[in-house]
Image (cartoon, rainbow, N blue to C red; front, top):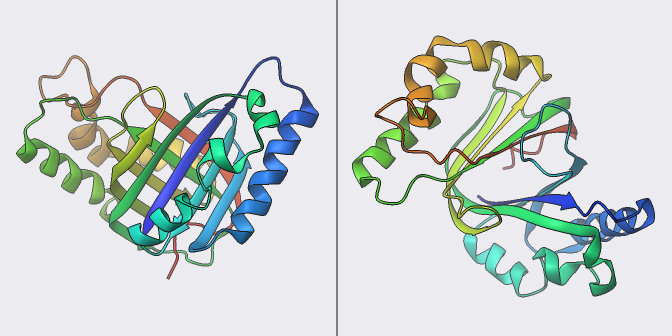
Length: 223
């Protein structure tokens, strides 16, 4: 799979009508764009950090499907009419090829989506990047509250950083993240060190995009 996550931050001066116009346009586009296998359009929930105000996520069967769709205006500044663009102040986005994925609850209903865009620091050795990727992708083996998941390297990025990885999970509720996920020994013993500025193993930029969104149906377990 090839997945596109875009996090929209509203301009403070934009009004409700302008924002609704953007959302309506993206909703219609998601249902019509060629090659889209699944999609999510939901506001960011409290607890998000640098996650913008609106989540727009699209799943494609392949990189080729994504590229073909981009040519037909999947990117935000083309799919939203020009007169409405001033409603959006910033977009952080990452389009990533799936490296690891899984589904414990493909029929999940009324769950929570969590998206995480990060940037591995320039100059990091490839061997360390691969080790980091293996350890991130292995997390669901230890953390049962992760119901469905997807992890991959970002191929196309925009926003505050040149994002390098997209890590996504689905939970029954936000407690599945704030509880077992964050407190699990595997998390703080293996993964925290890649992010901790006081640890010599750190390889990840301090600027990240961490976002929660409500889901009526599963968006990660796509056949």
